Length: 76
Image (cartoon, rainbow, N blue to C red; front, side, top):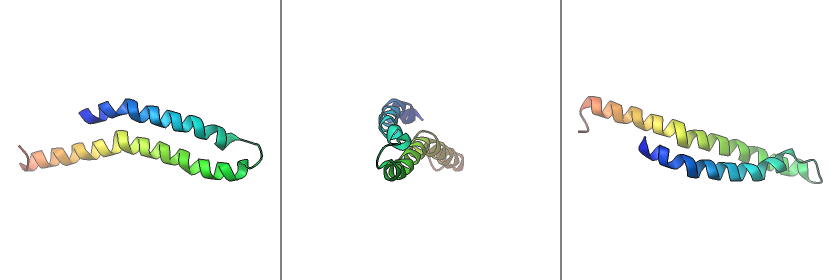
């Protein structure tokens, strides 16, 4: 889980920067905003889901597999 701790700051900086650019597009009301919000909405969802996967789900699965392998005696 050590590598996850090292990745939190760079990942969050990237997510915040991208979201700061996408949210005004998503909430915009000007000309062409209907088309742009349709593009921005899936990108916002993708950023949120990739952040959760990168920082929580994948390390949890790795820990479970590692624990299972240690219990089976496959790793020393």
